[in-house]
Image (cartoon, rainbow, N blue to C red; front, side, top):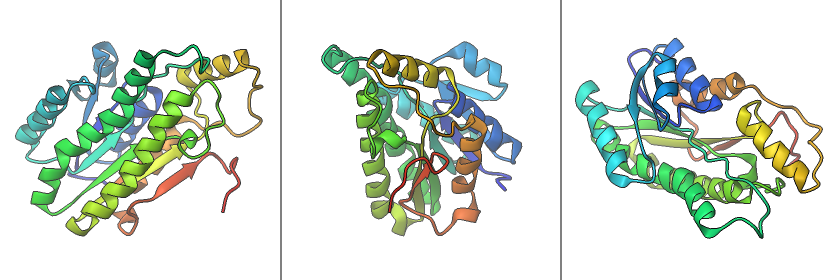
Length: 238
């Protein structure tokens, strides 16, 4: 599906990001994995670039290095997250800002770094991992992350409108619960706030990765500005 494509997966050290990087590579893409944890990046066995999403210079330099080595970036996948959770009244400003820097602002920085090259080459595909909390914030301990997801959703649709005519498709996947250490952290924090574990399907990272692969490929060539809700039907909506 992706033979010859150059894919940059940001946030490739989390459970979902790892699954995405491996899936894209298994389907023919040349994957460059980025994250902050060097040992986790090394364990992937893929080309890797350490990155600090809170620093614009770090993001721009990594994007430039990838383009210099491979000539282009065809696919960008943003899958970074910072699981800072807790009681709304106890979370400090610095914790909120850290989450927004890692996800909302971080995604903005990576997209800003790749869009000029995609325009020059006539197009590309961007896939953002958002989250159900971006439109249904029902996880009481996870309001910083949900707020960042809402920003990601807005950026996804806004940039799809702006750059779709230039051949760049920007879509998002909004998972519900996904089996991972991050899910366990959020569930434990919610339990402390009196919320019982939800009686709903819990996805595997690989299930989310397969949706990302579809959005990154030509099979989804007519999808742009979509936010695909991937929660096993747990959220009824029109």
